[in-house]
Image (cartoon, rainbow, N blue to C red; front, side, top):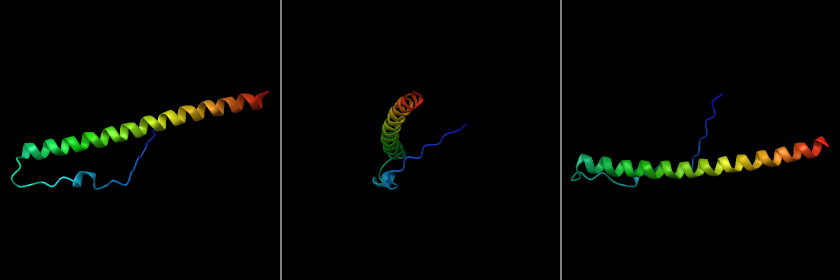
Length: 71
């Protein structure tokens, strides 16, 4: 079973915030873009961690509810 989590914060233009200036070297542009990608990955990682915690909490609540209904 494959689970895909799509966290879309609507920030489709996040990587368009930094203009590519012709005077910048290719290395500088790539370095800047890589920094933007890392920031987006960190943001997504935080969202996934929060979601995982919420799922864990919900599973505990469901387990307690199931046990209460069983007796």
